[in-house]
Length: 507
Image 1 (cartoon, rainbow, N blue to C red):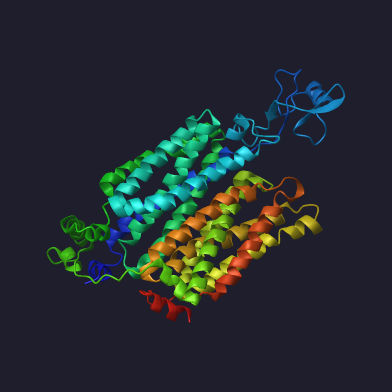
Image 2 (spheres, rainbow, N blue to C red; image 1 turned 180 degrees about the vertical axis):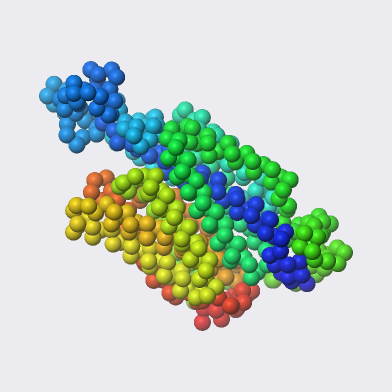
């Protein structure tokens, strides 16, 4: 008997699995919040040089005399220069607009006027941590178990979130954000795997998309809290402290029976399966997990065998490229929210709404029109929408803000859909004998794309500050989307077990 056959007996998505799936879905809320917290706490408010002769200087004009001092000391449209003895010079003290943010880490450390790259580094280390996590925590979960790895990731997520709020130096801040990236991706991947191993094959797409909906809910919560809590320290604490509640998962969340069986721990697996059977009102035979012991293992092959099949090799390279591009585009568009014109909290809420709509559409259509059509459509929609932002900049000089923002959100809708689909699509394309290796490579390359995204999002200032990153994300997304037309459809196809099976899929 195979494990999936056991799930059919137990119930593919019974009451027990629904409880587990809800517990796992809730984890995606703090994970999303911590991943994109940098959009707000590293934002750079409007600023100008502080007037040395005005000890209580503020960005907001206090009175007519203060306005005269500003006009006399600050060059028009300048944020970084001050007039001293009738000549302009760089300043080393600034005052900040507190109408949008009371305080951010960037304003706290004065990362302005040539020091903006430190903000970009601060966003990058989160994705650097995700890269480390993709390389190490997946292996760790196979060694010590899903539950222990998940609990370790939750503890690190709590500590790094609180540590971020308490950081008084740039190095400590970077360390905390790095750990946040490691732990956030650890929670994301480990929880996903754990959830999939409890649910029957026909319900895994539903659960996967359900998790992503809770991810989008996390972004809504972040936008709401940020609107009311505009100091970066208090915001970091307010989103991190409640995560302590997830320590209860030590008692609430069981270990994966599939992992326990793979490790020969049949008694422990049987206890969990029997408890699931009681909740699902299903009768199981005594020590049913031992019946899986004789399951035939798929013969392992060397990775070099991939190079013996040109079509499969090209297809695998296209999948890896798409992981890199879509991760870069998705995270880059999310980080670009702070660069868009208009109210940042409204932009963040609209961005979260775009994601939510995208995930619901994918949930409804993925098993109807197929993975390939939906994925290609999402990539091309997102890419062309981002690319189109150049036209308002060139041809509509006035009142182009809402057009650019709308196109950006449409781009985010497409990128979010593709971001969710590729996890399922690529797993169905790779043969079982190489699936773990190829998914590991794809995920690693995806995190590299994510690590590059902050530098693209902050690539330029001036009129093209908003449009140029979107053009880069859009053009690469279109290219990757067109290449994905080479990939076969996997809807209603059996998972390829061997390289020969995968070759038949790519024929």
